[in-house]
Length: 377
Image (cartoon, rainbow, N blue to C red; front, side):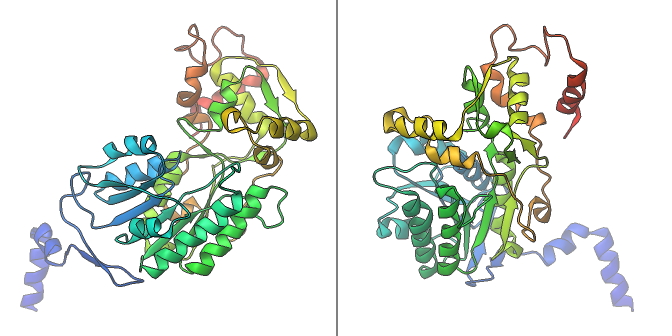
C-alpha cells in the first residue's frame, strides 16, 4: 500500500517526470512494421521520422500538402517534370527536407526512385483535359495504378489516392468515369489505399473563383442550376496531413466537401458581390458551349476544355456511408467567409478597400445575404 501511495504522490508532484518515463521516440508502422524514429521539439527544424512522396506536388493542392508536411519535420520527395515548377517548394521545409526528383509518369524507374525510401505516398496527379501524350485514362487509371503497384512492391506503408467527388463509371463526364476506374485500379494494386474524394476546391490562385471573377461577362451553363459544395484547399490539405499519422484511415474512403450546398448561380452572385460588380450573364446552351470549347481546345489557347463543360452539368452527390471531415475532427471553412481575399484583386482601384455594398443601395432582399457573408463560419 505504501509503495502505491509513493507512486501516486510522484505522479501528482512530478507529472513531467512520470510522462517521460513511459515516452519514446520510436513508432512501429502497422502494415510493414517499419520503425519511425523522430527527434527534436517538433516543427520545421525537427525530424518527424516520416518520409513522404507527393506526386502532383506542383499543382494547386500539392503545394499546400507539401508545406504542411515539411513544416512538421517530414522529409518530402517532390517529383516534378518542369524545372521551374518545383522551385517554390524548396522553401516549404528546412534545408534538405524538400527533395526534388525529376520523373516521368510512364517511366517506372523514376517512380521507384521517388518512393523507395518513403513510408507514405500521396498521388495527387490529375488532369482536366487531354493532351497528345496523356489521355485521361493514361493519367487517372494507368498512371495511378502504376504508382500504387510500385509502392506496394517496394514496401511503402501507406498510400493515399486523391480522386474526385461524383466519380461514377456511368457518368456522362469522361473525367468522372476515368476517376472511378482509377479508384478501382488503385484498390486492386494497393488494397489498403486510402481514397480521398474532394469536391470543387477553392483557394488562392484556384481555377474556380478566380476564373469566374476574371471574366468581363458572366457565362453560365445549365441555367446555373448545378449544385456544388465547394471546399477550401486548407481543409483538404489538413485532412491529407492527418491521414499520415492516423492509422484508422487505412483502407477507408473519405468524401471532403464544404458545409453548404449552392446552386452555381448563387456562387456567381457571391462573386459579383465580392468584386463589387454587376456583370451581364449569358446562359450558353450545352451544344454551343461544347462546340466552342472544342474549337479553342488548343495548347496555346486553352481556356476551358469540353470535359469541364460536362462536369458543370453534374450535381455534387454525397455517397452514403463515406467518411467526411467530421471523422477527422475538422470543421470545414465556408465559402462566404473565405472568398473575399481570393477575389479582391479583381475589384476596381476605387473599391479595392471598400466594404461590401459600397456605393450601392442595399436592397431588402440582399440584407440577409450580406448578414450571412459577415457572420457565418
